[in-house]
Amino acid sequence: DTAVSQTPKYLVTQMGNDKSIKCEQNLGHDTMYWYKQDSKKFLKIMFSYNNKELIINETVPNRFSPKSPDKAHLNLHINSLELGDSAVYFCASSQGLIFEQYFGPGTRLTVT
Amino acid sequence: EDQVTQSPEALRLQEGESSSLNCSYTVSGLRGLFWYRQDPGKGPEFLFTLYSAGEEKEKERLKATLTKKESFLHITAPKPEDSATYLCAVRSGGGADGLTFGKGTHLIIQP
Image (cartoon, rainbow over all chains, first blue to last red; front, side, top):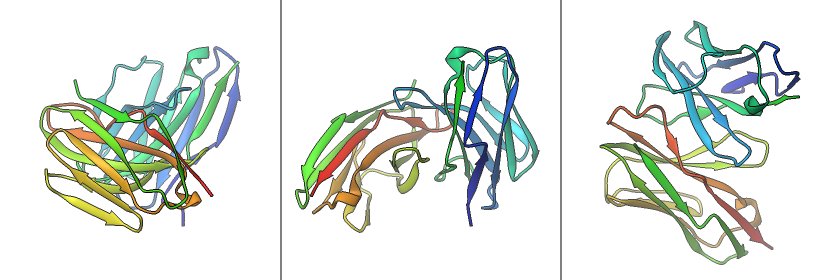
């Protein structure tokens, strides 16, 4: 069983388009996150959700918006895509904020 | 602002040659230091959590230790399948958000 899953694995799109990435966890965790890994492989936190409430919001463009329909899902919506948005996006989950996070396989987004 | 610095950036070892990876950190109140392994094209895989100075954790050929300023990941008699990027991350109590990651150490174990 996959603990944290993401779809799609690859996403190629043009500048200006709007796209979504889905994330689901079956670990029963109460906190979920989105990270961005840039071309230099540096992982940086974007958002986290705890019990359906946004509790962390890094200084990311407001074109990015997380949406959580329930505790097991945290989707990432991106509007008006730009070239600089090209990266690998990882979803993660944890039980509480201080315990270990489990990551999904990543979504490679390429904006042309 | 929390900071995590990992060294070396890359390390090439012969199979069976033991070594250590370093993670230096600056945080406002450490609430956990985490080690992950990342293989190419995959998400980070959790290895260890350390919460207080003096704590040690072991798993197979890996051992993680923690002081007040740094953590070490010791690799004993590594095998080629230990080749990966090893990431260190911290969670602080000072309002920093999510995990703050270092840039990782790319480890290659040659047969």
